[in-house]
Image 1 (cartoon, rainbow, N blue to C red):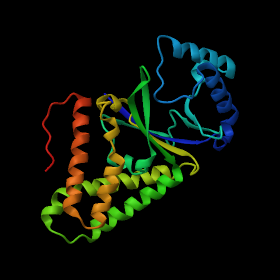
Image 2 (spheres, rainbow, N blue to C red):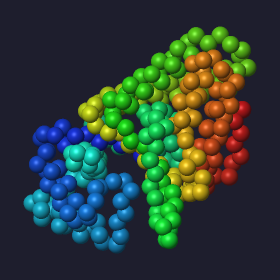
Image 3 (cartoon, rainbow, N blue to C red):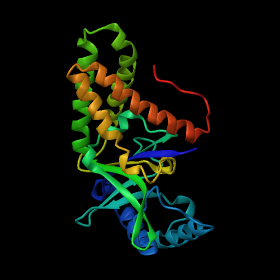
Image 4 (spheres, helix red, strand yellow):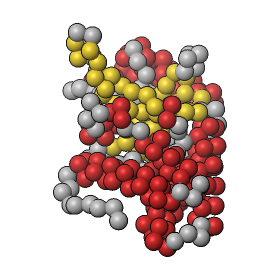
Length: 261
């Protein structure tokens, strides 16, 4: 099982009713580990239990009552956090064995970032991919994507042979974009949204990781359909969807043959 995540981080002062709690939590965590809390964190042995015991003492609460969060710090030193386990509006979406296509649309290609591993003698190896952007920018992009998809699906009058393979995918993408737009609308618009490839990074060859540009590919697909270039759109869709189907099969251990029609 390989997981990827889409996470919303909101400003610390957004959580006024628990601001003291989260401020203490973040301060203690940074002193304890000298780094922010993220989904990429790894605990060994009893490290997590020992951390929670120490944190409970600092917060003056029982360990069972501790609430956790992921958090980041921007270039000004301001903190943004994503509470873990919220049942009202979850700050974290998880996808198993693949990344939904709509998850790429809150971002642009230039927002792609890499994690690195030092391999000795000054060499580095690409270790992971993630994207980050401000929530307000991401919502604007999703709105633009939705309008494009909606317009094409309503007004396209081209050959049925082209719409047969392309349009079911576009309809599915439109639904995903609409749901994601609604989700993003429930958060502070000055926050950050981060797409983390997570465990799926291990299924991408580190020597070709620089070539993984699904965000650009999906935006190119929308550009093609907007301009009525359906043959190019079908080709772009086939490449991207088949790539992620191969990754999904690797992650799930499936050997079932897959062919895009």
